[in-house]
Length: 366
Image (cartoon, rainbow, N blue to C red; front, side, top):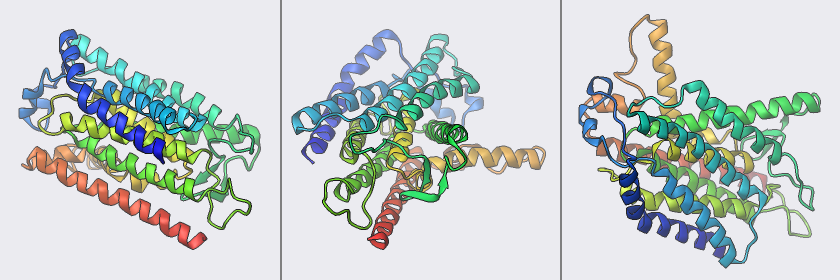
């Protein structure tokens, strides 16, 4: 518990107090936001954001790393493979986003990596994650991930390896890839208004930290007689700690990212959020619950998918004035702050609802 609190506090302090230092460096090297032309964006006032320092996701990525390892050191716990895997996806996805951001800044155009190149970069990070997560058991025979599809815990009849090891590995890696690519790109789509993705990320990752901590308190490991409803999740306290550190870093960053933003997280930040959410869903064995916990991100990507499908089916008509959904609200005349705060509320309600369902399942199992 002490390591969790210290990791959160250190990461929060890192982002909160060191962001002005990073902003000076970003301005000096010319990391300014590139904005599309007024004809292409929901609100022409976005043009005023041009030149605002971007790639701020680097700040809370570093804050999470410092916070987790410092919290583990001073809290008396040992860094664990499960938490390292979370950091791997965070940093790996962040690097893909950084390349995308850097290409935009260097060319001063809003086009970076193409969609498929971005997906290939994400897969290069996800495949090693998936392989390691289902290897290297600890002394108790536990693996970081599971070969089952999960909701609140593994679903026995959804065994990906039911038809053999080779097909099982293929299905498993496809499942990991779908979760990772869909989640990271959904967060990326949500990052369109000041503070929206960062604030929503706090709720989502904070919910996962609570889930992992509850799994630690109700772990099947460490008791002479495993109690009904216990969890087989490996190293849940470390998962809770790294998630709490990331949430703390986001809170510190949000101080500077809230409307009117002094810094944008960029793709490096939005993809890092997607990486952490993906890793926590897989390693806490709550993949299907992700649709509720991260429902605010699902709304963004879902609105884009619906817009395209409706456009094709109706041969040119639009379901929304613009997608993602938050830009539709802008074009309806909603103020940016109003949209952000109300979507934060929705994100919070969805995250709390998911945690509540998770707890109800435990009551039923126990």
